[in-house]
Structure formats: structure tokens, C-alpha cells
Image (cartoon, rainbow, N blue to C red; front, side, top):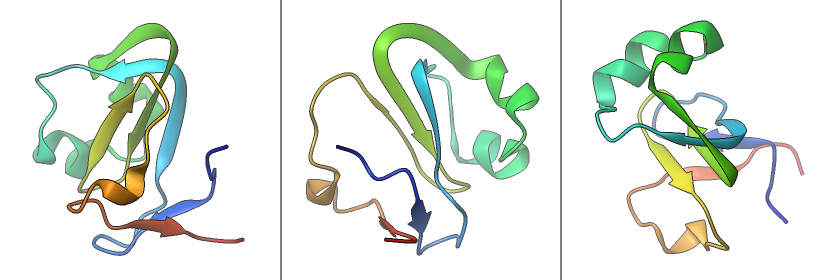
Length: 83
């Protein structure tokens, strides 16, 4: 089960998650920095993919399409925000 209250300790932003989407490969830091958390702007780089989930804060993003341990991702600074 995935935590739905993730928070980034690098940018101090809540991590948004989007079921059945992945991020386009052209996504970059400035895209998220300028568009988070406005879904209407983020949709420009979201690709529909059944069973996947797109995660993003203002400084990091990931597309997950299978069981993944995010704790092994050293560059991510995401922690549980409320549990």
C-alpha cells in the first residue's frame, strides 16, 4: 500500500499523485516548479496508462507502473506527512 500523504523535505511541498497516468519523458524541473500543484497545467505532460501512478512535488517526479520501493530512490526526499 502506498502512503497518500507524502511530503517532500527538499521543497517542502505535498507530493501529488495521479492514478492511471505517467509523466511524459520531456518533463523537467522547471515544468514542475512552474506548474505545481495546478492540475490543469500538469495535464499537458500526463499520459494515460492504466494501472500506473504519476507522483510529483515541485522538485521531483516519478512514474510508477509496478510494485516499487521508493525508499531505494536515494535522490527522492519524500516522507510520510501525516501518519
